[in-house]
Amino acid sequence: MDGGSTDGFPHVAEHYTDIINYSRSGKDGGQSAAIKEGFDRVSGDIVAWLNADDYYFPDTLKKVADCFDKNPDVDVIYGNAVFVTPEGFFLSYYPSVKHCRDISEIYKACIICQPACFVRRRAYDEVGMINTSLVYTMDWDLWCRLAKKGGKFLYLPEVLAAVRYYEGTKTLSCSMRRYWEIYRIELLYNHFIPFVTIEFMDYDVIVLNKRTKTTKAFRQFYNKVYAPFKSTYCKLFQRQDVSYEGLLYGFHRWDQIVEGTCKIYLPWYEKEFWRNLKLKAEPLDCNYDISIDGRKLHSPTLEDNTLIQPIPPSNGHAHEVRISRTGEKPWRFGSLTSDLA
Image (cartoon, rainbow, N blue to C red; front, side):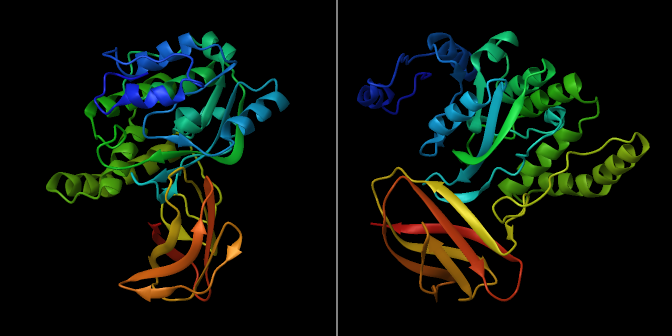
């Protein structure tokens, strides 16, 4: 479903006519309307959507289909996702995902990453399909309505999707329309005080890392006014925040701190092979052990404030990188890129 882009969509789509049931390029009613139109045109028992920048891990669809087959009473299956650079290199894991005994926590936080979520069509139809009036939160709104209807959710502890994350995406647009839609979910399902909305704003400010007078003032407000007020409010009214237990593949959820060994799972569909891994980390020394796809590598060398790890050409459609550090723990992950051959 293409909204009339000028980047050669029809030409690319021609190469996949064997797996495309329906294709349309031209002006439409926006993203939500395009998703609904796409769902209306296909006949599968399970529905999901991918935005143009996102992609699945190898075997994701098979894993999800098998999981639905084994759990016929489940309406929604969701898993983990990675954030990647525009080039496809690892940034972090989606931090909010969690296994829920009580799915009502979805009203307090978006604990499901959209491209890693799959819904039975019968459940989708029962809640009235996607809300086409929403621009930013059509996914979260759908999860909330499914939960409100009594849908059964199942967390699949697998990395299912990759999300390109960079300034210029809708998620990092800092649009007031987006914040209003987030607040709408709070009004409908949670409470009238915009806790989640303010926390989304704060997360965006931190991720974008733009140091302006406005962002500095907001951070001061968050730390000195908002945080103490929320703490007092929750104690008075016995409200609990969503609690996130444990690490995600060795990473702290809201930071790049690693406890012991981190595991980085990454789909790779490009034609170029990885040649040299380039790791930035703190502390920066040669006390790191790196393995890729189960192969332990020699110790990296330190060049220009970067750890360089030569590797044989690594092909295939997915990689598993494990990084650990001897000595001090924990340590901070910075970035992981590669020369391409």
